[in-house]
Amino acid sequence: MKKISRNKETKTFTEAVGRALRRAAKTARKTAKMYGTPIYVWENGKVVAKKP
Image: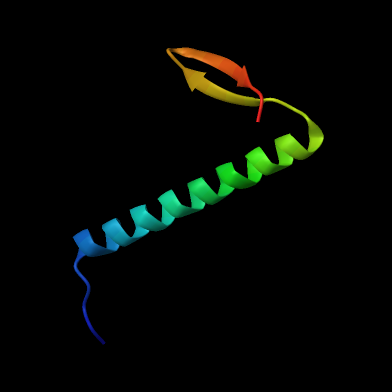
């Protein structure tokens, strides 16, 4: 069994989390557009409703 360094494990995990978050955001935008509901985002220190 090949030993993987902790740093490489963390980087791989972080990259996977980033991909998952982008995929979830894409799905959320698609669903909001389908139902005509706004997407809420954090902008300039405030929560703002955006049209998808």
